[in-house]
Length: 402
Image 1 (cartoon, rainbow, N blue to C red):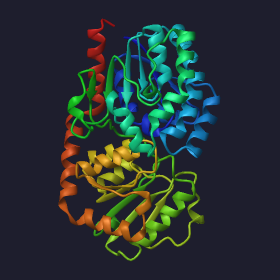
Image 2: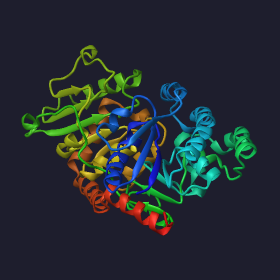
Image 3: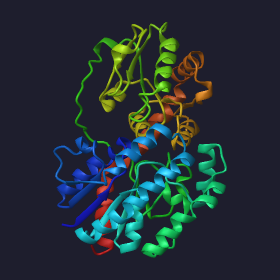
Image 4: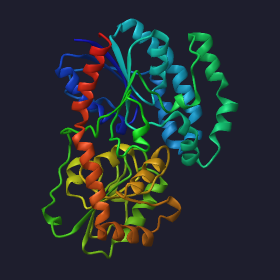
């Protein structure tokens, strides 16, 4: 049995794939302490792990990040503040808890920096596409439509100086704010879906989609939809309670209200008052929350913001998509959905009722999208997700004599 510290990033899409992995590891005798923000502890109910919370100031920084930030450039000041707070905390926890190894989300630079400062064996958990170092700046330029390299060169010297003067860390690079890899990195997708997947070295282990039976608090009867094409729409957990969200709902209403052969299930988030949404067509069913895995099993088309976790789950069940990225890494994910013919990408500038209806008809009427999604889904399933991840961790322990 080993003692493990697991440093989580803050969002549901980053936490969900790790839940079955933690359960699998604790069932094999690992003692795990999970570091999270307040408000996400419900994900860890009935689990055999200890919960510790990050500095409470992180909650307000994270809330501001979600309200004000749509791209990586705008995120940099928040990531900087978060890391300045959490690097000392992570180092102190490692020295206090004396774990045998740590696991950290690939966005958690504070944990990677703490591992470098203490020399602890470490494993990165990547719920987003990892990027080759030489590709990172070009990816950021795609995601932000700006020359992010100039921004880095001008504004991140302070972070590098802080790390070197206080902890002797001299290997900080700008991409560390967004992309961090460990002695081993677990990636929750397949080589076939990962951009340039065949170019990553053996320290990256592509384990497939990490899915197990999630505890859900809502069930939907699909019997009444059996004679219709089922379309499922969701903006994920971050973007479903602002002006864009309500505009998007109305675009969907106008796109499909006259399509009697379509039934649309729309997940609008727990903070949305459905009673205040006007003009809901008869062929729409709106829910604050849906059991996404159950819905995807029945879905013919998924209209998504392109969050990595949602896309992986859709591919797992062979569901073709229309992906309209809103921000952060979503443009890269949406592009890859289109690159592998698992669906189409629709830019926000082109998002209209007519365009959405046309793209939906194209995806539903052309079998290449369904077939390609099923083929990628097969690669995700054969990797066995959290079971493979757990086995890789045990082999890592053996190799490093932990």
